[in-house]
Image (cartoon, rainbow, N blue to C red; front, side, top):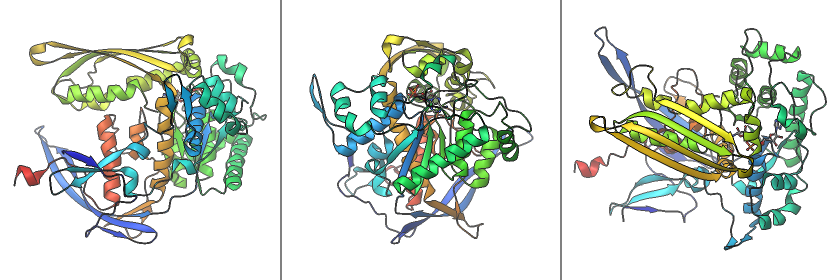
Length: 517
Ligand code: NAI
């Protein structure tokens, strides 16, 4: 065997000098090596390895976790809810091919494995992420949220036209009582074609009052379900960009003032984010708009609350960040990428509005930037492949998203290498596991603190949680950290962080022991 996975044992413990397990926490240490690069006057570069000792402390007991989705009654919101409830209750359903059982495929926290090490007979041994460190179980997650549409979750699931009729029928009694709270509605930021569904909106137009109502909603939700920790996830429609203005949204102070004075450039999504941050709840921006204006990021930093953005990376963009990584990583020059999506869900319907499409188009276009810029032997500075993204609304497709793309690459002696790809999947089936993972991993990172040899006390991770870039089209990173789009680098970050928290070195795939026996 070249590989095996150990899934039987519940927990997997690491032994050795770099890790100690206590009743409530695990402590580990890691000598972290980074390489600083400086360009010398003659244009050559010098690489300087630097070593820093990190200590980590991870609390072992997961919190009681709530997820509040903004846009709970949408396709993603209702699919996440149906998936969690069907798994929790063990609901199977009948299809023309027979009975189907629920699962959470597509979720790294539930079905991701990482290579732990090698056994004496040379077998690579893999374990699930969740066997290294305890994670919240999806069945224990409590769901809630807001929607500007008043349908309860059973009705919303019907409207979404995603899951099978027998499953929807069985879920109906369990979802009927779930009713989204009224949402913040501002017709300035959403396409006109959404007006007919906006029958569940917070009545006041006063932005400070709206923030207060959302804060109260979060507090009540926590109290009602006795929750320790709530993550708020924006999975509502894409908004138009808000205009970033000095004195309005450039600092935390100006943003709070702009909210008090009802400034028109404070978007609903920023209001939800501000409310969450002030309640100490991490906020994920699953759409491409600039919710995280500078003032909002500063507010998160000041309050030490995690934020993750922007725009879920779920389908074609994920594929692009794999394919272009392979091509450019192999020394081939991608010359053009022409991609088409067509689908007919409500999200796409609202994106037919030009203003709403702008942020989405920008996010989709930028998902290969770091990969191309990493290879200056193929591309001149600022040169990018011809990249065209066409998206069309085709009502009859519903949530079923088809994408077709053609890549033209130059390989040896300029010979063209053409790749044509077709994908089809329900959009929300791609996205739902991402939402669940984000909340579960955020809850874990909330339990982590660290100290370097230069620090006296342990401190939490940086509030701009770039460790979850794997899930985002345009990842937000702390100042000074480069943005990474390449999917396998993003996954390696999560994997190596898990390893570090239990005192294991990062995965290097070297197998030095056999190559240099
Ligand atoms: P959807 O249109 O089915 O659901 C969005 C929901 O948000 C609707 O029920 C709507 O009534 C509600 N809503 C709109 N504005 C609101 C507000 N201000 N407050 C509260 N509720 C509000 O859309 P879907 O398919 O669920 O997608 C949700 C978001 O996720 C979209 O912004 C989309 O761009 C983003 N996204 C989705 C991906 C996927 O499904 N594969 C991938 C990447 C991003």
